[in-house]
Length: 324
Image 1: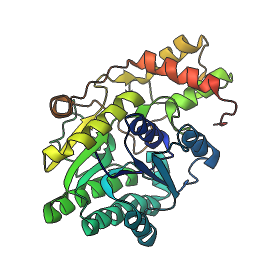
Image 2 (image 1 turned 135 degrees about the vertical axis):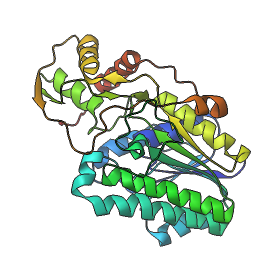
Image 3 (image 1 turned 90 degrees about the vertical axis):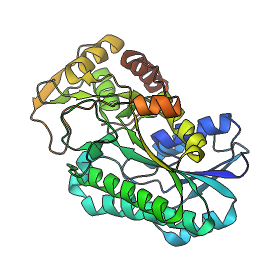
């Protein structure tokens, strides 16, 4: 493939793994990140450090919601593909800052798609979330399920992002893959998510907060499996016009099982404080992945225990950790 792949959110958890893997596969990559203060800058700088000096990598610090900044990047390079991973993340935080989520995730997506239209870039991967399914109780979640009842501003902003992607596809023949991620975890994982928080607090001898009775479940998906799905979608997008795919492990982990696995991999007993369920959270997620298996050759291979063990190894390798 000639030209550059533009990856937004390149310094984040998923973005840094995606850039690193693309570079290992000899692609040319342009990374964008604005170092959003949702968590400390040094975390993202550490993510970038393993590949920032790679000869096939160019990095820009800036905000993709800024059309002038986005235009300068698009003008400077022969970009052939957009992999839009950048977003303002976090369901619970979106309840406190809804307008910021709409601005970044909806307006930002529109800004990038408009640049793709102007430059004739018609291979696009847009990342969405399982949160778009709202309070859906019928499992597994299928790409054909309704997404008109999101339960948080974050989820609503992702629904808007998907709608914008479809609009630009319909009007301007942009070939598009939309990927709905299901609770991604692993090394470099976000410090506001349960795998990091539970490991950190357990290892520090601190209590974790358990929301609900332990019967809620999440389809935890290991980072390597997600990255394989992203790159497959990028490479195969030219084969279709517009498609939506679930990327999950299709093997949900109950909260009670999650805590037991933490104890198993750390060798420590988890102390917990039980609180009511949080507003905006889906009680149970399960990805239907048959479409991704068929069209993307997507095949998640990492069990939750194996993935959590690898996450613990990464955590123990850090010379500096976040207090959460």
